[in-house]
Image 1 (cartoon, rainbow, N blue to C red):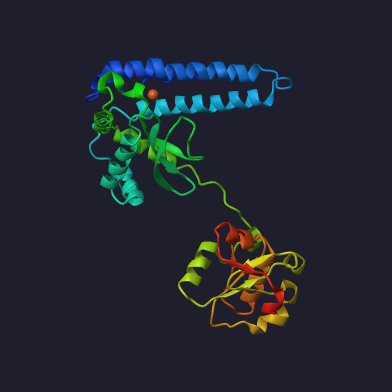
Image 2 (cartoon, rainbow, N blue to C red):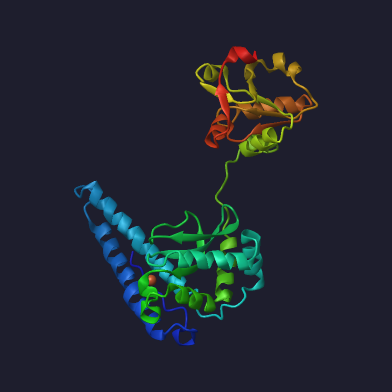
Length: 323
Ligand SMILES: [Fe+2]
């Protein structure tokens, strides 16, 4: 694969307080160099003999390729971030920024602070949309390769010295201010609109339990912290439980094979949460049986391990105590 050069997106002579000379040098010498090195490295990787070249060499070349590809992509985004009057973001992107940062003003201060925070250093400041979360986030990176996985950057500020020293010397404050004055909000908003059409990564689906209500471990934690009464039933299979070292603090273990024997000990006045090891079957089946019997029961998504992964409180598992 050969990567192709992208034409300069912004019109250098229209920028306010940033000279054509700066943009031309940046485009030609830095963006161009990244692209050329990316192509050379990609060629090298594609043509080397993977059977004989040591793994560490392939690994180093691959990392370098990632860094150069990101440098290329971010430079294209940087030039596509400039060329507007920088004043107020348009309505759609302004609303999205206000939703995710509190206000446009607050976002602006944070974005500028991240830029100024890279003074004397180098890196990128990015406004990125994350489809998984359906939200925007500011990101400060200290090198080209630190992108948010699955994120779509829609605005980029280059904080490498080559991006400003010709016009601003070491005065990064003036450079960041000039960048903000030149943001092309129309283009940023168009990219935001495109980014929001990217679906979130597929979540775990369990069609056989599609209608069964679930609860997240975080919500269970909030219920417990709020002092609300809730019956938490650990229904990990007996063969698993006998090996287990710990149990959710606040839960009792009940054998899922003997649900008829313990269902009568539960109260219908308080909600019930059941869970198993990973949240796939047993916890769901228990919740289904309890709902059929008229209980307000839900299963905890992710089960015992999700609870442990969020550092939920556990206690030593002693089957006898709860029997
Ligand atoms: Fe650059």
